[in-house]
Length: 385
Image (cartoon, rainbow, N blue to C red; front, side, top):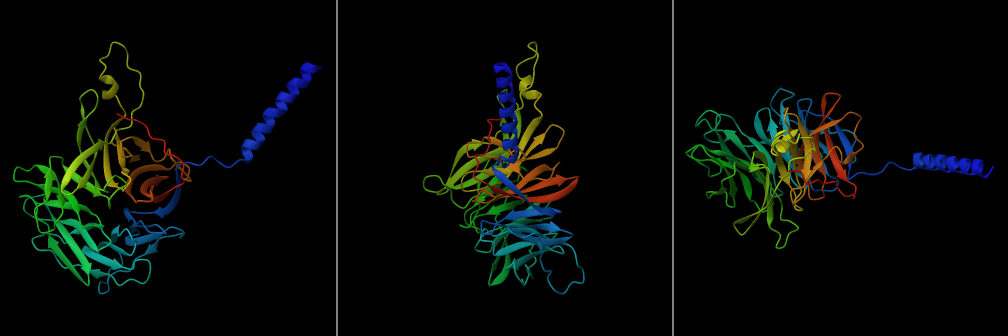
């Protein structure tokens, strides 16, 4: 009888545990997803409260503010009968200005959250198109590039300004031009130049009228507004080759600190590592040669040294990814709750100093934008390779 009683008591306890577990809230993850909806492109994210994001949907530029249910379509510049062909490519960190392209013309949207009065920037000199701005700071300075026509596939770095009047100017570049990719609130610009030998070099412009500082890595992608490090150096993310433990080179991000004109390497971003079985008769380098992830690219970096971008599989598919200051890697989908079932996050395009991430993802094959908001739960980073 005692044995039967103990058995029933155990069964009852197990049932009670399962019942309580079913009533408990789902365990939180480091990010909570906000679905912006179907998009064509994503531009950037602000550091304001509420957080704002920009991009393109239905052939028009949009701005999305945290707390909204749908993005707001931005006005077109008056005078053109076409009703589509605009794309908002960047937003200032304070969220009060946006830039992009309106029917092939670089455009400024002041006060994008309310009735805006957009205007076209002037036509740049020596370009075969009108250019595309890709980044914007709080001083209303935007940067990007135009097709230069010097040689097929070459471009020219440009700097636009919206301070009272709309202006555009060339940035000093290499023999075969270059491109500007980001600008911070101090006015420091990062990007790329191409020298007379055709070598692509990462470039840092501290003065828009002077030649940039260059380094032998192909491209600088993003720059922070200071950082949490001692003396608050700017942090820059670049992309270039770096070998794995077996000596095979892979493209990945490089994190640098930049202060008083000097650069210091902090880390290189790791590629996700998947444990695989390698027969004992195989050389040890097969452990890396057979990895499903083979490369990584970063786009932007914040003041904590967190950079975002994607990891690339050996079949070409990409996975939205995040790295910490030391280069450790995290899969954003694994660390995010609230995604529609079956969502595949493909690319993280921007991150702000609050840790909010703007991400592209496929939902049943359709491209959506997601704003990932940090919850305070620790991110599950791995060492990678």
